[in-house]
Length: 366
Ligand SMILES: Cc1cc2nc3c(=O)[nH]c(=O)nc-3n(C[C@H](O)[C@H](O)[C@H](O)COP(=O)(O)O)c2cc1C
Image (cartoon, rainbow, N blue to C red; front, side, top):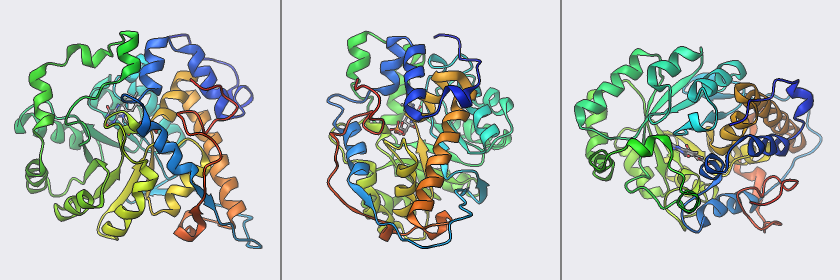
């Protein structure tokens, strides 16, 4: 891990691809492969981009866009953009301070952070690092009492909601990591007994959570069908988070943007729908909101910003993203996110072959 840049980042980074290039320069091959890679053939990774690249805009003209407001709302609080720093386990292999660096960028820029339970400096340490909007994501590695202890600590430390990631019944085969013999810090210490808890997770535990913590909102992350969205809503879940884990778990899944219409149609106004998977550019964020997402998770994007120059690098990446969202909204004839509708997008053939960096054409492929 090289020292992050201390220069003037506004001048150093004018585009997102420059940030990604800097992250690649700074990171050793093992952590880099861990950050960008996916499961097996990486078809789901590519489909995330394919689904986004298969949507074109239908702009409206001659509308007053002198004041464009790209702000979003997150569990009832205003945010500077409708995005969430998605949970990343082992962030400490990307940036020395781990999730504390993400927390600081979250607070400074004004977007929420979801902390992964397998990330240093942990629930308490990350909460102490910044005054930010934060939610907590748990990988279940223990019994009910073990889970309840996490929920209570999250409540006590100012987290706004609790998240169960449900697309990890099995740990996938990440071939970049296997080929490079890279073992991330938290996997090195995980026990087989611990892994069994997530494989045994079912709607019963969701029911139990809602009975025990009815007032602490629950997010289910990793929903990929209308059927499971329906079950989540029936169980009283507040947020249906459409995700395929950035193509890092089940290979040969659909791209998240392609899943959105069926989930949004089924959920209606009964819960919020969030989404992640391949979102890298301002246009991607606008497409998600037009499809009905309330919040868009940024996974690799967060890692790239932090890898480029720590929390300042992530703030700079978010500034560029904000500029892109603002430009896109203005050119669509839309002054705020609330004006976006599904009529602002339409199906169109992608013009690039989708891959993990196809949103950044000035960057080489790898
Ligand atoms: C390096 C890395 C580690 C991740 N760790 C977690 C995790 O601990 N918990 C979780 O729910 N999702 C995890 N994810 C998935 C992200 O939260 C998010 O769903 C995914 O990255 C979104 O796709 P994107 O990277 O294309 O934006 C991880 C993703 C990456 C890239």
